[in-house]
Every structure is written in structure tokens, then in C-alpha cells.
Image 1 (cartoon, helix red, strand yellow):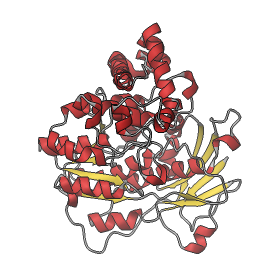
Image 2 (tube, one colour):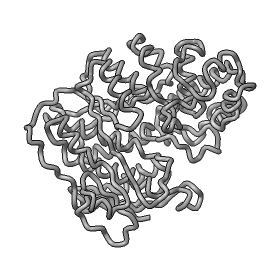
Image 3 (cartoon, helix red, strand yellow):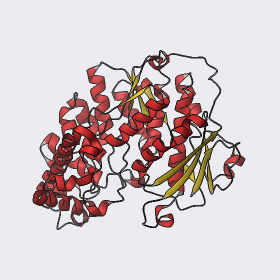
Image 4 (cartoon, one colour):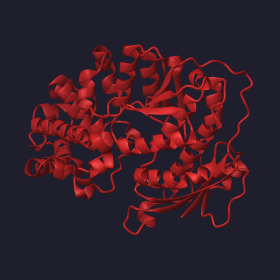
Length: 444
């Protein structure tokens, strides 16, 4: 399917099936599009910063908005022969089409790794050049940028950075319903409320059945952080700015529990291979941004144990969000893979099931503590859920065949370099944490 991500006033290239309006547009122009994304980004950014990011950062954000919009417009079930893999032809308006087109092969490979699809990219003239803010240049003395999603990992990352005191980060949040209050509270409790930049891609589509897997959703999060990085005085002075993406190694590696999980809904945005590819793109563009994840070789449980302010973690952990299926209830389902990882990490951290104060739907905490996972409605809904069953299958497979057979082609030296064994160890340790939790529930 052919899709174009353009500013509203730009003409639609011939042969395009859908167009996405990015950055700006009136209602009349938007009505002629199949969707839009990022309409409020520049106004919110200028209000916060008082200066404009680099043109290349705007271009990367245009690409990210186009990718997320295209992902929503192309439904996997309706358009792919195997129910997952799609062919997406994306045109993006940028400031220097020749430079971006020379990198198209590199970007296509990166996006294919991220989403599991075949991408074909074309770049055209029409990059975003917003007017500089009227209030003047201003100063941004912060030293780095860090993602603050409202999740437990990014909360730990922020707590650790503030406890260290060696950096003064700008915390960047992708503002979505259900997470905003958490993000603002966490920043406030860290004493960093004035260093929180909250932006919203707000991708919208019309006239189609939107794709729900959203594998590339977090690339916009990184794009917002890249915008913030180029706003800092350090970047203006010609220095490199670190962009921290705190995520535990087990989740970032995203190894399928079984062969049945080919189309995992988990994003790969912090996978070490994707980070390597994205860093390569930043370097090719001469964007002075260095991607960092200090927790790549840690499980979520070891992140919690090593957190540098345990009192603050104990206060805020239960308010963070991990669930991949919370929906509009904004309540942890308790049984999807991210919830299993969360519950098992809390067990490793505190040493007992009832120390986790998070509210879960399946099963309730008291059902776990009293071993009612097989004779209670919520317990049965937990025990028989696909992710729980597949976690048990993976644990059994590792016991019978060893970790190398389980990780297989997902962790190899050719794929991940000399750190492959360390990555394998964190993957197995993360699975073991889940196993320890399921054993206490009586399912093992």
C-alpha cells in the first residue's frame, strides 16, 4: 500500500492510496487526508523550550510520524497474505530529500526489523520549518535526555539518575490518556517537574480498520527525545547529547516464548539491534545524539533490587504502568507477558507475593497469596490465559533442551556481536524470574 506523510498544503503524489497530514493543518485540509499525526508538537515544544530544534530532528520526527500513521492505516489481517507481514510504500516530506534518499536502504532495513514488514521509502521536498518562537531563544542547561513513559523501568531510570546527581536530564514523555498523571507525578516527586517535556503524537485515521499491533509506536517517543536533545545548550555548543532509553534486557530482547508468538505485540524499539541501527542512522545524519540503555543486561527484578532510592521506589512503583492490554480501564490485566514480568520482578524485589501493591484484574492478589488460581473465577482466567500457558511452555522447553535452543536465532554472535552470551543470560534469567513467580502460584 502506498502512503504519503506530508504537510497539508503539499500536493499528493500520484498513485498514493492514503495520505497522512503531519505537524499542522486546518480542518478543511485535514478532511482530505486519511489521517493526521503530530499536530500539536511544535506549539507545545516552543512553549516549553523557547527555541527551535534542528532541522534534521524535525525530519526524523516527520519520518516517525509517517511510520506510525502508515502502521495504523495498513491492517495486517486485511492486507497481508500471512496475516502479519505487510508491504508498505511510504513517502515522507523532508528538508533534504537527496540526503535522506541516500540512506533509504539503511532506514528500510531498520524499519523492517522494528515492525516485521517490508518497507519502501521515498523522500520528497517539503520539510517542516516552523517559525522561531516569539519569546526569544532562552536557555536549556540540562545535560541529557531520558524517556519517562509512566512505566516501571523508566521510573527506576529516572530515580537512579536523580540519585546519582551526575546528570541533569530533560525527561520526555509521549502523552497518552491514562499515563499523563503518572508522568507528571513522577517528575514532580523527583524534583524535576520543570524538566518534563510532554508531547503527543495523537495519530488518527479514518475510513479504515486501524491496525492494533502498533509495533513502531515508540519510535515517535524517541523522535520527541531527539527534538529535545537538539534544544539543549550542550547540543548548540557542538557536543554530543546522551538519550537514555531505560528498559530491562528481558523485555527489550523480545524473544518469543514459543514459536506460536511470531506476531508479538511488543515493540522492539529498545532492542539492542534496533538501537545499533538507529545509532547508525543518527551518525550518518550527523545528529549528535548517543543512545544509551544502562539496563540492557539487567532483568526488571534486578533493576528493582538495584534502584538507588528504595523508599521512593516503594512509594511510586504500584502507580506505574506495565500492562500491554490495560485498555480504557487503565488497570493491569495481571496475565499478559508484561504483567507477568512485572509481578515476577516485584517478587524478586520484595521476596513475597503480597508486597506488590499493584491492582490486577486476573487474579487478585489475595487469590495468589492463598493459592486460589485453579478454583476461583479470576484464578482460572489467569491460569488458562495464553501468555501464562506459553510462559510455562517456554520454561519447560528450557529445562528439557537448554537456553540456546530456546533463544535460537534470536541471540547469536552474528546477530548481536560479542555480547551475545550476556544477552542470552539476561533472557534466561528473566524467564527464570517468571518461573519463580508461577511456582509460588502453584502452576509449576
